[in-house]
Amino acid sequence: MFSIIFTDIDGTLLTDDRKISPDTIDALKKASDSGIIIALSSGRYLASLDRIASELPFPVMKIAVNGALIEYGGEFLQDIRISEEAYRKGAEYLKGKCSSLISFASRGYAIDADDSWFGLQRDMMGTEGVRMDLRDPREVTKALGERPCKLLAKDNDEGKLAALKTELTKLLEGDADIVSSGPVCLEILPHGVDKGKAISLVSHKLSIPLSEMIAFGDWDNDIGMLSTVGTGVCMSNGSDGARKAADFITLSNNDDGIAYALRKLAVI
Image (cartoon, rainbow, N blue to C red; front, top):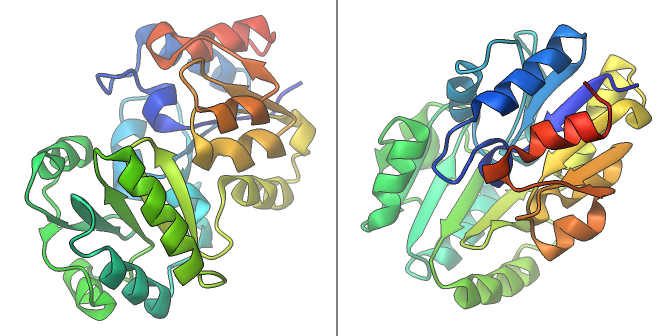
């Protein structure tokens, strides 16, 4: 018996053209109608999850910024922001070293980019955000009206991001956590924030055993989630780390992998 389904967004719930297929929506609705809670669990910020939730014909829990923010039933179960010191160190180090640097709050973002990433981010998030230098967290807070939750670095050079991850991990050890959320995405998160820990908190708050939870993901930032729940499912397009952490490998995000697994595992 399952009581809650957690699903990542990019590379999992969404196809590569950033749509949710009708079959996947139908499968999740059947689960929701049977009393199973559906939770969107993503590195994205809350405003972006709001947009996705508006396309779904059932209520959802929202776990944003890799678990820093958890919203359910109109209330926050968790709200963690990155420290000013960690933010400043990370932003100053990354300035000029990556193609695009983005600062996310709960429902707003600021971006420092002059390339194709700006247009892509605007299309994904539905707004242009605030364009500014991101090195001063207090200025970013003024611009967004709230403290930022994380920093996201983007660059098409995967080797460069891998090197930056190594250096940032050393620079911010104990102050922030560095995680890859895609081949071209590197995130600086509040120390201790992880999707798996967010799920453990949900388990405690809602008194739902981890054994009654199933999660879908595709990348390294999903490893904690996939290894925490009773049944972790990785998409066939997933990273090596995510695949190793999963109990089951399903079809790809372009082939209704979520719907396939829900039926195969007798969830619906």
